[in-house]
Length: 264
Image (cartoon, rainbow, N blue to C red; front, side, top):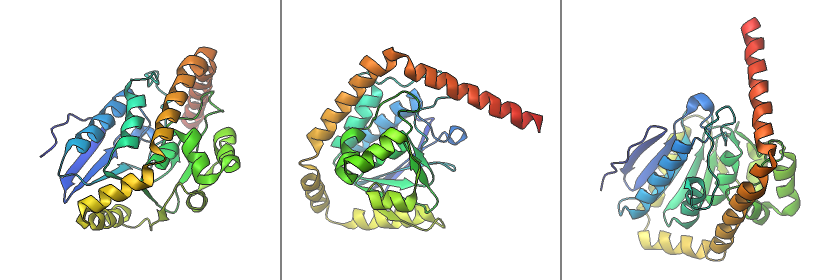
């Protein structure tokens, strides 16, 4: 079964030897989330779920960044409504029975950090960094991070990330549990490919049952958290006007930076 998905903002490679690569492909914006990128990623995950040739899904980014979260420089906003693509993408990541690997090739900001807690394995380069600027931009946690982060690292350390937006480096992310292992930057994706290939060679039934058992007590909590978070953003955060003001502040700061660069 070969994929026939129409993609422009993600790049698909495979499936080859049971491995499908999904590469976020907006390097000029740090692979930030655009409605079409979300829609294409959702379609790719759903296609992989239906494919008997896919055992492993590897999610990574093209360019210097893994993912920089919501695109505050654009006025094309992702919808957080229940049943829309963003909400369904998180559901698909929670429910997929394929082994989900994140290959964090660079910084993960906002969704680029929260989505890691929905993956089975997370490999990162040594110089990546992570932060979740929810409060700064008037938003709320997403990708079920209000539950997954607390489960992984405890309430206070999760609050440090989600409330203060403090930046952490890869070693600390490894200590907190959102990174499984740090790999050398040289041939990083090749190393992830080798790990994925070894997993793909394992008995499929063993992979499936092990993942099911590991996630059995977590799945419904993650689904419920995704619902609550999207509802909070749609019903309270967006109507408050805070996210729009945050977007305007960000865009103004970007314009000022461009002016200073032009003056040099």
